Image (cartoon, rainbow, N blue to C red; front, side, top):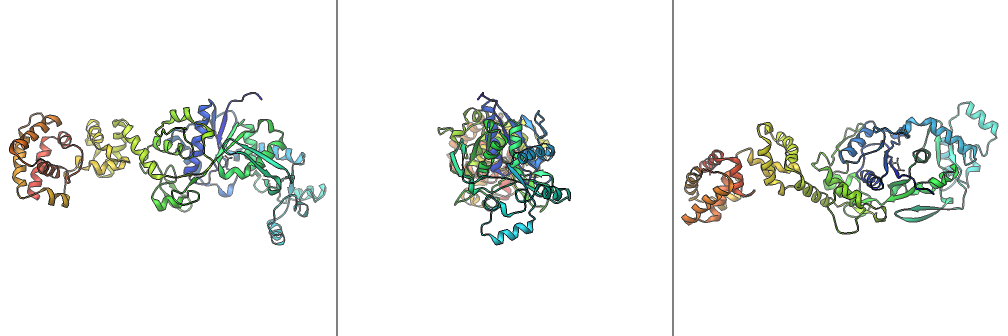
Length: 507
Ligand code: GLU
């Protein structure tokens, strides 16, 4: 077979917010496509009108764009194989349903929900398949005239695939290896419903993968049970030669215990399971998102890439380009990956340190505003220096405020514990003396002022720790923070003196 250009697709159903596991599927498709010099398609699988949620499609596109996952084709991106929304492809599917009917690989079934229910009661573990189909009301048991007259009379029907029993179906999975399933356990799945004139997932998915020349199907493990049917459909259509290769990704697991990661785990342990905040249009419920929680997209990408794949060495920090270079489906794990949320924080901390200070400032300004500070009153340079002093202490941009508030507001209270330990009867006198020393410093930048103050403490024989901590308490409000003279350099002489004076008055 000639080598085809790699084409993969991310094919979400717009039934709500995209779960973080779905984001990982999209990411792996992207990494694989780019590494192979191929294309990534965004196809919206909206054939289940019952589960359609308005806003979900826009949410999916916004989330993946935020993360830097770029599509070459698809809904919102254009391309030669459209339309890419399945609800706009009805006529196409109709033709392929007829093809299967004519080939005898599918049949029309008229059983009403009540009739099916009655059968389920009558036959334990009822399944619509080779063992039962001849007892049902369908085009295999009715005459051609009866079928035609029922359709002409407007009776609703479905089209079911006709699966021959007792055949081993081989699914070759790039992650799991060969999976063999006997066709007898499969049921005659519904492929088309006359009621909404739409195919079901199985038919639309196969037809579109074929027509869009998809070469690899990379998707979650929950779709593995559908794969044998898909293999059969490829054969029924005569497309076995160009059937895509399958790769089913193992589940994302709960951080502790067993089972699939759920939204409830996130709520319970305090982390988001959605990329962006999601406002459920039906329930009105708001769920937190990685973006709104202060994650950088680079951190989310790096974190997710390693949940279920590894580069074969112990390298952890990898940007998108590097991930594209090293990605390899054969290194995706067969077993589920525990969702280690602490690791996500670690990545975010790391990427905050890597980010240029000016970019952090842009993210910090809204945080200042949210805390009642008029950020426009500060120039970028001042904010960049503040950020560079405190960023080593934070995992999230939001936390910069806790670390840096004193750069914008003089302390209104002093940490009690520190006061007890560091502010003695003698302190006001020493602090007054310190103010004189500070007043005399001409170059108030960090190094020179440090030399003068340390020189003075040494010369007077004061206790270094006590004096410096009292100084810090007066300026910061507690005995924590970055290097003292970096702080005073940024605050300036006047503000530093004012804060010491106020502390002397108040303590
Ligand atoms: N529409 C399916 C989903 O929502 C697509 C599964 C597949 O990729 O084949 O995940």
